Image 1 (tube, rainbow, N blue to C red):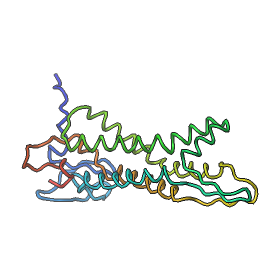
Image 2: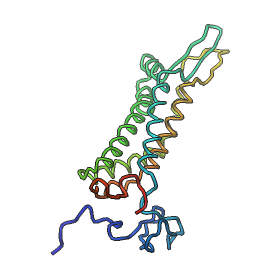
Image 3: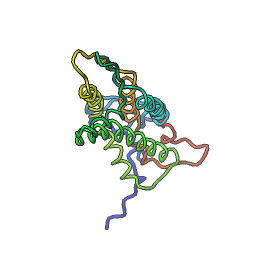
Image 4: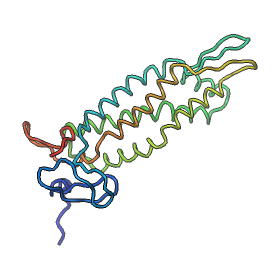
Length: 223
């Protein structure tokens, strides 16, 4: 009769390291800090070095830049009729008033809802790892995988900003220039991708240790 699955029974607990490239598990020599994967020759470490600290650094930088990304203008338009600046939100309002409801919803989801969701989900994952939470490990792993999938399409946000700039009311002989908000928004996209990449999801399954002990979950340091 099979025993119940133990969530803490990880490969690392048995002295095995998993390659993040091909998924192969290998048994490293004693006191080794890194080894080469016997299958794909990639460098294998038990946990990414300073994973939590690096992820927090990228994430906090993204959160700081998210404010000017939404408050500063993404476009500046000059024409014979005068000049006009548009933020992401004012562009969404303009599209909604003009009857382009579907496009307004797309811009809202891609430029406001998705970035906020990425910031909140990754923050939750980092806090849960640092607090040693054992609950909903599978769900948290799935959440990180969802972040990875969304991250592959993160540059779509930049495309949406460019599309928004092209669809604002521009009259003949008008000059359209990108504003500082567009650059800040692009930086937010890149920083959230880096934060997701820096986070090591294997830390979710590591068991917390007593204060003063050494744990790979603490900062992703080799053990």
